[in-house]
Image (cartoon, rainbow, N blue to C red):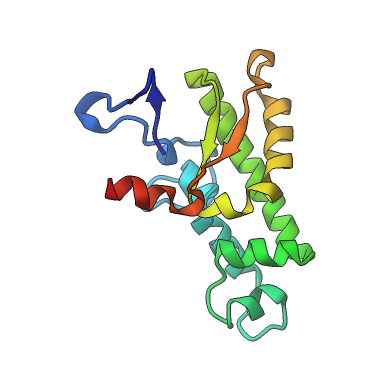
Length: 167
């Protein structure tokens, strides 16, 4: 993640500002690759969703999630596809993911007071499934002045980070 302020990328001290993925949103959960527990990225990301889905299913079971993954690790893309097909487990995983995203986005609203939040990355292809719960979570948790800030999908979807890194 990053922050654009007044049309410029905010770099901060030593060019390391806005490591939003490492903002702590819970004191529990999986350990992030940075070594901390409860990082936004470790709790609410395509990787986190895939990890939870893989743990929920067993190799060789007949669940739609496992069939879509060809009995390998389940990815966020598989979860989104299964949720679109009405799979109850996938829909529950989407709901949990969206709540964590809403909590993280609420923190960003309170910290930066942005005009909008743009969501890209590995979950962007499921934005339509995530958006209602993200919005409900923001409306429940944000101070009134921030509840109307739009959360929108990145126009480049799940490729936004790759294209940004290449430019």
